[in-house]
Image 1 (cartoon, rainbow, N blue to C red):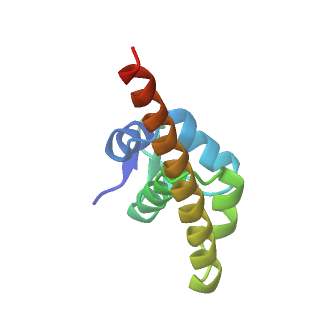
Image 2: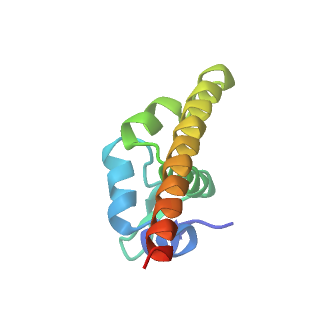
Length: 109
């Protein structure tokens, strides 16, 4: 994988330009240079880091939480992931209850 511009990184990772800029503001990523046109570029390491940050965001972690876990050793990362899993399982249970209620309301019509 080669160095990529911000636009290319966004296209390849699914992260928005604003998201990557937010990652930069939080100190999570740093452009690794500029190309001959003056566009910011990101090396493979930063591209993978952006993918990882986006994954954590998609799982529901906040930027503040990601700052704490992005480079955390397994004994810190594992409990954070387990806690998020519990939260998602609870949300899923609540969603299933709502679905059941809606189905019951529909059947009563």
